[in-house]
Length: 112
Length: 514
Image 1 (cartoon, rainbow over the protein chains, first blue to last red):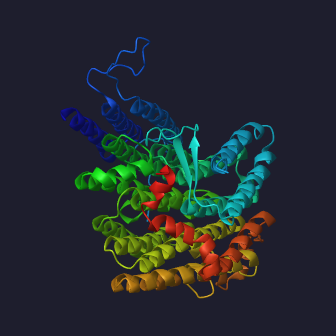
Image 2: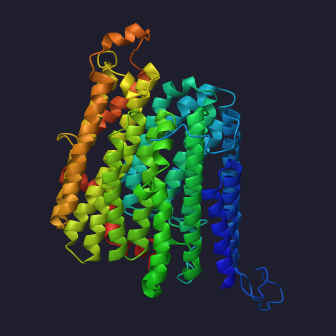
């Protein structure tokens, strides 16, 4: 159970980064940490103690396998995460070129 | 005919691929190809809607059930999916046609149309998916395309809005992924119908409540219901106008409201607590959204706040239906309330899409969005003025237009279900909506300052044909959709969608076939 709680703690660390940090790049890192914690959680769901890769061997011996489906989900989630992080960083760089700063207190044209 | 189902995802995805490749040689290709292809897809969706074939299930990969365990990825087209498909592709087609003239002022048009196709493909995938992880993948496809499209103008406002949208959208996506993980943990399956069967038999109520709350937060952020609405006014007002009309008209419904309906009606058993939460969120959005809207002077920002308020009506209607079902009330009242909500969903897509296109036309001709500096456009832009007038009357509920009937149905359902306070609030919000659209009309189109434009040296003229066509088409739809109150039309278009939600176990039995 501890390991799941640690996973949630990692998620909260990322959330703290997004909420409390004022630097755009640090916010992106916060989102990335949240994403990794969710990926870790999905992998932990499929983990079976002492399990091996789910490949049937020719001798027909019964082995304990880990659940491969969460692993496939995590692969997809990593690719999606790559796309979002890349887009976030691209926008952050563009914002830097416009404002010459990464500080979100300076970037406040939209309000009301 | 099951192979009809994946067509709706394959065609826009293929369109995105072709536009990205051929578009880099000829900019004109994407411009016409997008509207052409989306018109075909819309026609196909309408054809299926008027052909009674019932629920279609397509198994990607073709794997059959293995000992009552679904292996393949399921795509399901039932009444509700079909209803949403028609809305998505119709508004998509009209926005793409409008873009032909509008996007000419931007560079790299082919990327715009590629992203447009990807967004439509993602939304079509979300409404067709019968597998919760597949739904997440399509949702991210639509969301990432929309992040990029919001920033398409690459100016200060657009970039800031897009960053804010991405941070909040990213958090909501991660919450959704977390809840998918939790559901898989407890049920060992990802198929919505299968999950439904398992958690109805032996799901612990506390666990379901926990997952429901996380899911409601995630999709509430996507749908911009009121405690989670902070990104919407920025993102929807900064995007190029056809994209604003797609985001407000379709995206928040397809990846927000639709998924809430699908999961809370067809996957979880309806409980009183969750239906109460959904109704309260809907009411809050309806009231607070309109109060925030009335003080705005930027046209698109005002419209964006009204999107929150009008989505509140949709969620309110559906929430009343859920409350009635949860209390074992009369099913006719529940069907009436859900029908009102879904009807308002279509109407909102039409009139809010039209209003954003009008705002885009005003911006295209004058370059101004601030209502204090506009005025007297009525004689110079007759098409924009008249279409915007019909959309304004529709959103504020003036009788012959569609908005009146859907609001009336929601209010009558609230009275029949004995929620008198909600009915009064709905009437009150409708009156404030009318007031704020009187303000839009007066300050944008009818203020008698026509000579002002000549003094400023701005030569204002009516927008080109493609923009006029889309606006007139939507304005006609504002009137024509009133036909949905006629029972024979209603039975074809709306009733299958309502029935898909009303009988919550029918979904899992038809999808799995046992």
